Image 1 (tube, helix red, strand yellow):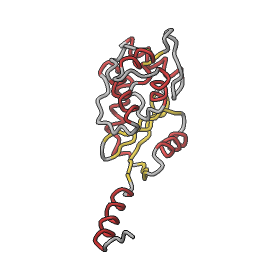
Image 2 (cartoon, one colour):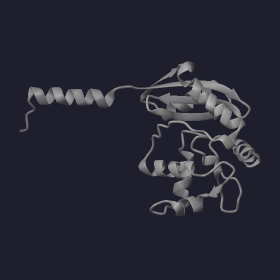
Image 3 (cartoon, helix red, strand yellow):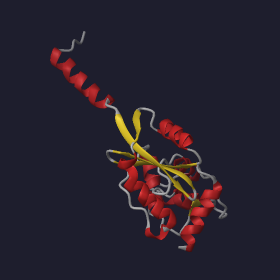
Image 4 (tube, one colour):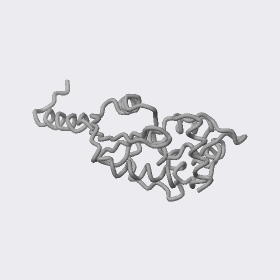
Length: 187
């Protein structure tokens, strides 16, 4: 029988407290010409940029993505990030430089890092992106990682198209994807 000492129990309790500490996420919602934009920030950086039609829809999406986190609408905390996002939407050639808190599997994060290397005004295909991965991956796996992206615009999954050049699914709608690509191409 393996008995824990009092010190072992205290250490275990402290470790459990650290791992179950509530992660706080502050967010704001702003209006843009492509819809409402929710920008959320953890203490490590921007963890979510969501696009939608209504505040409630965006808040529900955020809650679904971060169910264990305490989500607080504190406009002042994320307002500078939101300003940068709005500026990017209007002037995509300037880029969107934000400190990011990318939460996902190691594979998803590697796909998201690859997406961040695609310059504004350029597109790539799922197949080309998959073959550029180390090790090379399957285009469907890359597409799934793109679909799981919680940080729209800063992780530009809108820049990935089908092999035939057609626009493929975009979590926030094909028309938004088309508009974002057109703005970047014209910039």
